[in-house]
Length: 301
Image 1 (tube, rainbow, N blue to C red):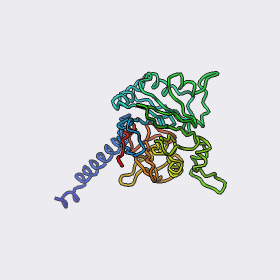
Image 2: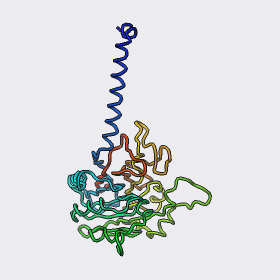
Image 3: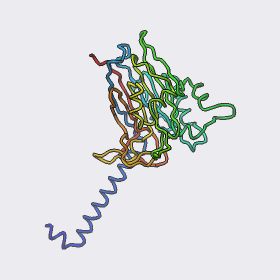
């Protein structure tokens, strides 16, 4: 039979054509699956002996790197996913808009639709910083967020209290040089001291959540005293290579150490979201838009 096919140009042509069609369909499926707005919810459980009992089972939803992307009219599909997750708190870890945006209407409308249903905490990403955004005369981006009930953590801390027990959420605003992949002898080192300069020292007797847009400084976050880091920026490596991981960082670094998922440095846990939108690179391949749902659990000694 094989010899018959090889010796029959017409049958050989049909086989090659069918193989090509199958490969093309697969490629189109992979691209569509990651770019047509199908949102994945990745669930993580973080356990810690430092966590107060009152926060056992608390759910935190991480939104990152929206880049003004809409998911259906008025982001209705994203809103449904958020509501389905039933979080106790929502944190955004930066780049909810892009540096070239003239406004942040997509994100602001999303907040309007959520209508203060969940306590929401926001930090700046490199795109918000680069944009130097002002939403209308005499009004800043932070003003627009706070009008909508969002807590903006610009190198600040907020204390969450449940049943007279507390944990801390810190929002770290990192300088643009902290994102550069190019290192020279003149490049400052983003260390524990840099974090202390911006947000102060961590109380190591309390559970500390650090919101930091870039994950690349995990060792410094750990040394500072973060129990849990929630981060984004990497877009999941943009293209996920099977069995290897993310292909590119936003700084065009090949196969970055951190692309998405769960990482641990000493006693510090980091959840790194693949994010929702696209930055400069316009496609996501094998890399669905992602929400991360983090459940806190008390670890018994």
